[in-house]
Image 1 (cartoon, rainbow, N blue to C red):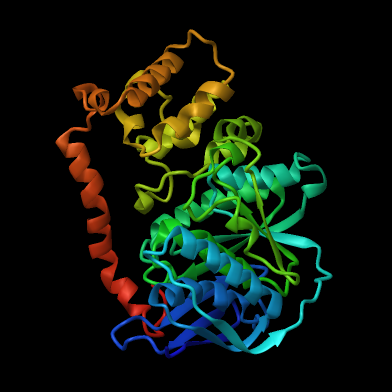
Image 2 (cartoon, rainbow, N blue to C red):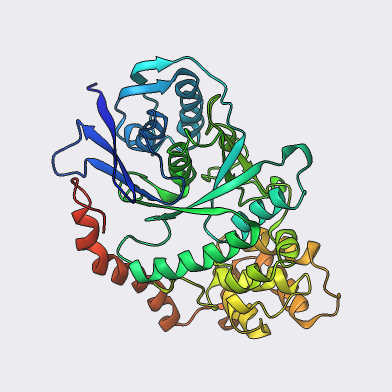
Length: 412
């Protein structure tokens, strides 16, 4: 099988740096370049090694069943770690991925980094905000890291074409980071489409690739856990097994937060007023740059805070109501697990009417399909149409902008 060749390159200008991964061996009609534009106080002054490129290109190679060869230097222990990562995912999703050989022009021996500071991926959501809070507020004991910088990625939850929305999101993120004394860096990338292959299975590897871009400035990268240890789901990109296979000796990657449920996290970060004003959790309306306040994720996060006595949360809009619970919760595919900790970890009183409504919905949901289709729990046609049409409208609007990034043209 012909190898898929990738070549990482790095350019530096006065205010930013541009790192690319050029593919050789993909069909002509497919995009053949991943682009990372990096701005901020920690933007790399010189090129990184090929670790980031290996992580970024691995989903494409596995999906095609093609050997992957990096035209550059890659840490030998990172190649070994990626082989183990690949083995896990080929067991979980043989329909998507096949095991392939990974190689490089030069394999560097493992070397411990003398840099002790950390940089973390930061979206401004509850999981990443709690992870930062935990490192800064002495919640982790010996696991605590000196997080000095963060990176916000455009091109993942917020499309590259949504410049205005991203500016709003960036302002929210900066306000939270400033409250913890952490520097903000920005990375804009076209990796998600099509190089991630399947977002829910690979997005953490994409985040890790971004963090590896900063390996010359920091010794450790941090990614927030979004699932607690007692509610782990596989296959899902962020999990307690393969999350341990993202770094190497010269640049470790640690995840933070799986020891706490989402409701417990809300209770901790609520002590910071900047979080209540600027937390950003909404993914159904990325064009807003903030929170819509009515989608499943927004309502669920309102519940997390309400359950620990915090309501309203200014950044999430109006206070939670019984009608919000009735209308929104059943849309979540993993409904019982997603709200179990709201009932079990909340500090609200047993006779709270909203708590009673959540408990009732859980009971009906677990009872079986017959109870899930009652009119009270069924989204009306207009709601379903709006939800399904929104991505199509957004994709159509952004198609030209995304296309221009495919073959080496500027992003956005």
